[in-house]
Length: 299
Image (cartoon, rainbow, N blue to C red; front, side):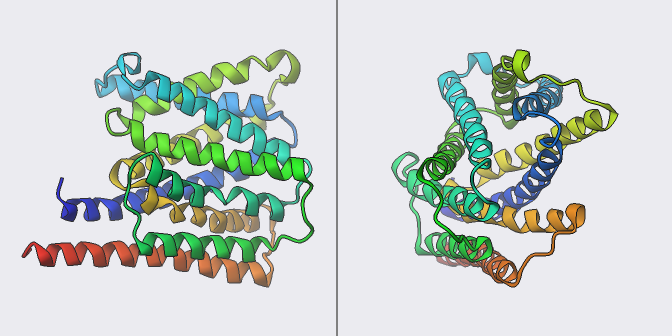
């Protein structure tokens, strides 16, 4: 693939991932609603089951090869384990950390993605991507406005969750080179559902009508979000999409206001502007790089 095509695909990947992270923010809002009445493993189980059903049916209709024949079976299992660990660490850390500290520590993940993409995927990370990632992280710091220092163990759990998510993100890019998005979604969520179901003897609570509707909505939103993000990583390098993840924080503020009438403070708006700026820097950088390549190739 020529460098010209790579730059054009990167812009498509950025657009897909941005839409996907907005779905993830809505997913988090639904989870926040559900955790008041249900345990996290039960919520994640129903989320995974919906993804398995939708992805499985679509993969069969499109005639996708079985994931059991994939040379990346062990990588897919590892990614599922990393995602499960990230969710469990993050929500358990939330018991001791305020939202500000939690958000700040967790959003170290995009920077980790940038670094891991160099060592694992052998990607070349230009100054534009580094700048976008760093501006986004500064925006998160300002928006989250961390106050008192968090105790060591919860903080370590949250950073570990960020690392697990970052490494699983790298694995998406690696596996996407040979496996379809639907096959990855099906396999990961199937393993996820099995692991969560093992906790039922201790956490099960039969959902009421509202609970069933929210669980179904959660699964559908998560399915759309996963598909868009997976496709984004198929089109764009992991380093190009690292700062795009920061846009999820802005969507979290939007859904917080719409659902719970939460009005962000001034520092939140200031941080959000920097986060938007980081994404714009990334888009402008990729477009300029694309134009330079087109010009150098006489196109």
